[in-house]
Image 1 (cartoon, helix red, strand yellow):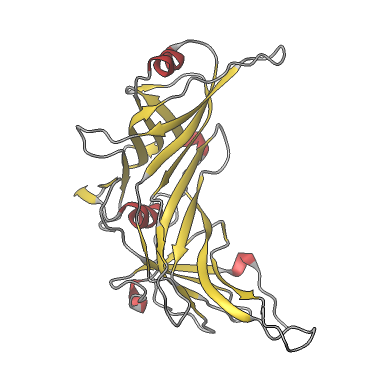
Image 2: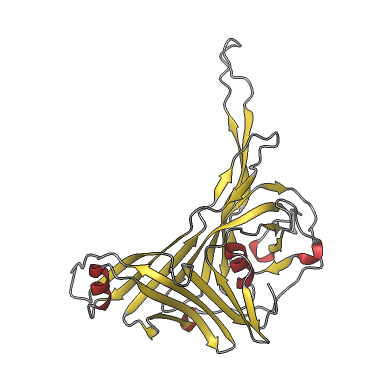
Length: 313
């Protein structure tokens, strides 16, 4: 009997033209991933019927929930698919290399279908009506660059065969933490030991009464941008900004060269005044849990620019 292994799992992603309806087989992308717990669940509701003895009557099924996180590598080409799911389609300029600019605050968001394939079983569950709720980045001195994408979907279709054998596959090229950089005001921000940033669409499930247990849709709420910067305490540059309540801009990037890069720009970030604790003889750190806001001049809170050789997303 065959057993399922993660090394042989495969994931397909396709953009829906109608919510909850998967795209044509030829429009799916084969995508790399690190881990996934996207799945559906359907609980049981205990019976409360009396008068039929001490033993309970059969429970009945509750509503269906489809949600979970997928951890994916920050790579040069496939990351654009996730950015499109999170922020909507980009504005693309240039001619190989192409510059894809994704902006926060879109009124409408696309929905996607995701298939997780376990060929040994075989089991190929297809999740439809999926929208990207959040995306979390972590910047460190070393290691592999990866993101966590939070997802909310409508339903699952069980399958024992894949929906597509003619999927699109981009050449894989991964960014590393070594290629990361953090800037403020156009200059490299000194003494940063780690940083994180999370953008959330704060999606709202539309839980209408239906006979199939599914939600009716997932609508975007007020977006949020938050994160953390940990710095060795060497000057008062950020501390003075925090005390005054003055917003700053932050640029977090992965750059291989001029033709291959990914840049996140948080246009207006507010820093809280953190505590400075002395706990031993080693260096002192200050940690800022920041919040983002809309730049009224630019009209959005965050911009992500991806430069690569993909013509269109």
